Length: 290
Image (cartoon, rainbow, N blue to C red; front, top):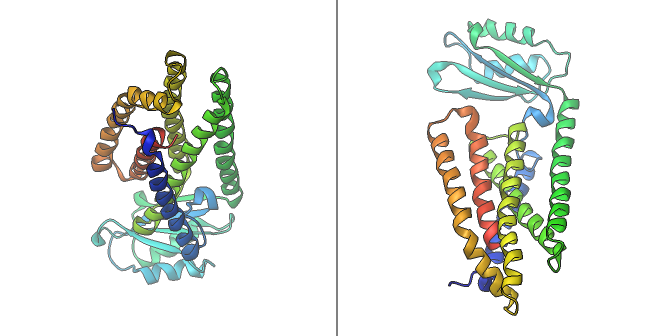
């Protein structure tokens, strides 16, 4: 039986390198845009205008001019789809009392807008701040509850607190990987962190802790069965006895997520992509880190 635990320092070194790279991506993002990753209006507040023209006639510069005339000095403008679709997305940080209809009227002067393809999504800065606080509180509360649960469930095992702390360490590992991936994908694909991203992070936290607890529970069962054996041997046996369950469960999820990434709609691809990276990290961390 291959001794996984014996080579744990190699895994810790690999994880350390990965985490440093992820932190590096976030630092680079801060240097470029002032944030560790691109935040959507869910967290910052503002508005996103999506519209489509019936015909050519509007350029990025002319659209920018319209929004600048309403006081927005740095609108983020992106063309959607193919050039002949004439679809655009503009993100701004307007005050709450700004009239979106006046802006759409001004855009219509550039070229005829398709009424069915106009949408405006607005979130006030106050709501954005509340979402940010709720996100931080959710992760902190999850960490406390997880630690408490493991300490109670493993109270008859020596050093029960260590199991809780190790589960939190593995969970933190996975969250940092997801955040680093978000920073990288923000550079490469322009992906933004939104409320759905928070859902993906909390899902990753749940899967990560669940996998760790499965291994820990088998360790708890094997300790009284193999009295006198070194603890390292018991842990290694427990990992091998549970690894097939972890891999089988995660592989099923991976195949489904890959199918969604390849054939699903654009609106869910970012969520699934983040979830895929997080679950991949969670599978690794529960076996080789926790």
